[in-house]
Picture 1: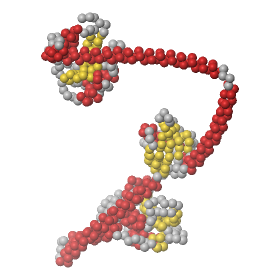
Picture 2 (picture 1 turned 180 degrees about the horizontal axis):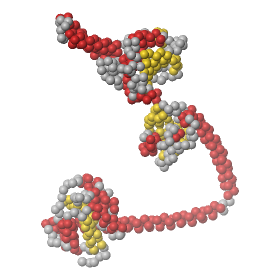
Picture 3 (picture 1 turned 135 degrees about the vertical axis):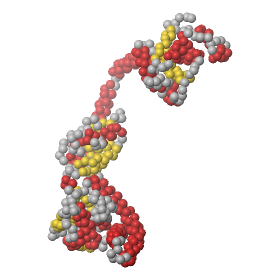
Picture 4 (picture 1 turned 90 degrees about the horizontal axis):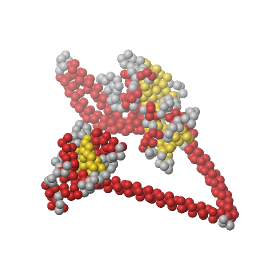
Length: 599
């Protein structure tokens, strides 16, 4: 065999020592042809072994790795030593380390020219999974165990030859690129010489002065155009500033890198309450000492930078007066020509009142649905109660007054009477007639409600009604029922020790619509307060729901529809009803806004 300077390196990656020995024996010591060799000889006309020996061969080096990590290290070192492997035989199963598929991925990352032969006896991975893991599917062959010697020799020879051809192709391409660069450099040099010659000829043109005059005239024209354009830009800037400052909501342009405010309108300055607009957005817009995301708030700027598109984010913050404020923040990226986001525009809308109105609308619709259901239940419930109470009364008449069942029947009759009252409330709740509204004094309704509720309880009433209080435009019977339910609820909250129920009122004018039912106009604001157990903030809206109560449940406390009916009546009067928790969790106040009669 003719000696060659060519050196081929092959890496075997398998956890089975016998596989390494078999492959080395096949590649380093060719044996007598097997059945496949004979088949090859029948097709080609000569034994494969003889054909193989006729080719020019060089030095063949075969290394072994028994785990994937060891193979990765060998390939990396070979590449650093400029003696890379040409072919790697990789087994699919190599416990306990990384499997063959992950080893293929890692080896490709180390040497993307490496050719692979996958050796496997089991279908751990499909052909699609294996080929999808390859950067180039043409660098992969698969051998199923057990394999023939000719398969090993044929795959090795084919992939080694392919590896060398690829290497020669790359070298040829490098030479072509170098040749092209040399030609381009030569063209540039020739072009530079021609340009220089042209410049010398241009200097000798007799009409140089005429050309210079034209240039001067053109320059003057450009200067005039620049002046006009500058004036237009200034006018546009003034117009934009006027438009931005006319916006009723805070508007700001923010630097994406530093969070610093670059520009802001008057509304943003008003919200900032004197804070320097050259500070950061979280300081200027929201009055925070740290960025939003560090205080468990979603940062509009960071969200826009991450998603690269306009977003709408809701934030709950403390307003200038200390109350909770819900802001709808519209954030829009400013994208440069290179695709980088350098600035973000934020436009903030206070939606606190809108959120309250949405909650009230939901509650109103829920009340309508419950009232419809309550009416149907009350009718059927009344029919059953009539039979129960009638039979109990007949039983009381039939038995002796001193009979042992007399107390039980009386208790049943009493409970049936309470059930009739409850059914009456259901019917009242579901079939409220439209209020017959007329001017009425609050003092009259208050006195009647106190006599009906508080005189028989251990609670007292504190009345603070000014003499100049406007008359209510209301249905007297329905508003008295509202006051009775509120007084009853306050007395129950202070049971069993009792306390003072305070009622106060004042004249107010609402400038604009603040709820689903209230519109602009004159109102009487009524407040009913107690010193009872209080209401948790999360339950302030729920207390008007049917049968919701935070008090102890029993036959009397926390089992009625009082506050639900009160809220429904106030809504029918185009008024507003809301609860307020007391300080330190003690006591509560119910506020009513009832339309006032015309002066």
